[in-house]
Length: 284
Image (cartoon, rainbow, N blue to C red; front, side):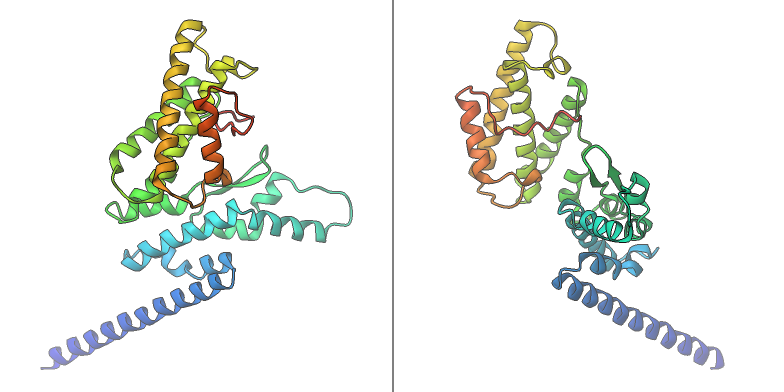
């Protein structure tokens, strides 16, 4: 009887602990949502720290990793953290000192995010913070069957620049992604289609209207390059069409709008060199 009472008491303590944990998690989520609604995406992300660093897998943690990725991407892609750091830095110096790359990456908010697994660096040439999608990598690793995986996999595709081999590898991975999730309604399929259209448009224009970068992607054989250019043009038209027909009107990478896509489609359809084309396969 005594052993039973001890066991029952332990069970009650264990149940109370779980109940307390549930309340804490609810509180964390509510705090994060409140901060996000006020536009404080950094605070909203940090509010979920307990879930992010926990070794205990749960539906809450899975959702938190997905949500923190959205917070982090907004902070980086909209230059929110970059502008905040520079305001802080220049307000604290009295001379013409410029921040170093280390100043950017050693800033407290960046180190806090990286401690949680964000994988943020500083791109000196672009003068921007870069996000390595650390939260998505952990999400896919911990929850391989996650409902968020189809979307997450797009962001984990490695981009390729400055050589035919690297760009073709990027294209191949994008084609594989689209084939894997074809028929899905996720927005990332439309974005992947746009990537393919832009890459192929880039390659067609470089091979059709040679410039100082053409040699990076040319085979050296004029006839062979002409055949490749025709294939790239066909692919660009196909995937621009897919994006246009889909009706997706959300935000594309590099803030490309639907109207831009239609104009790019018409440019390559007419075989004209486009002044609107963003070169995404060349990285200076």
